[in-house]
Image 1 (cartoon, rainbow, N blue to C red):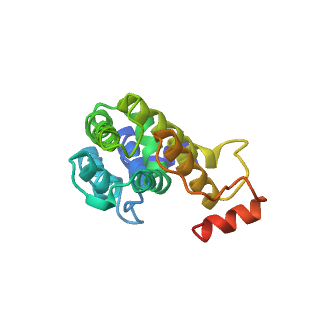
Image 2 (image 1 turned 120 degrees about the vertical axis):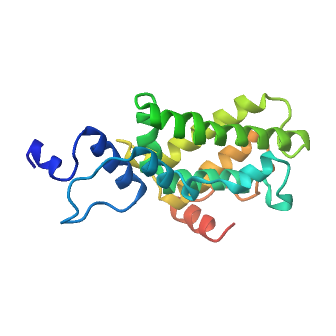
Length: 207
């Protein structure tokens, strides 16, 4: 494609940014006959950052609500699954947040920082009730666990030499490591005791 061809779909670089966010978020893209995109970054960000990036169980846990649904495993699974599902959008916004003020305000200093604060508060509440280890700083513990999970959920699939195993095994391994880091009780089944096929079968069977 010639460099100028893209401007048949976008009026300028701001419109290209708008299109990139739309594509990463799975939003509607221009169709033939629509004409060049007129950028409205605020509206596009509002649509991209809506319910799709919400973490209601973690928000409830941070507020001291949620009841029996608030377990380390459930909170960690919510985080991992969201990062896996929305990896393209999150990685794009992480990269652009330092350069584009609108993205920094809406995403980096808005949604992302609030989600981290909620996860940290949830970890602190679980530590206060003895569900996870109380001997480490909750903010350090939450961030360390989150960054490990982020690499496995979002960067592992595109890595030049990713660890062997399918997504089911990667998810279960990551969640168990994160639970262990938080000091949460661990299941008795070992993923390392059998060969790869048996490990994957055990994970899928919920053992």
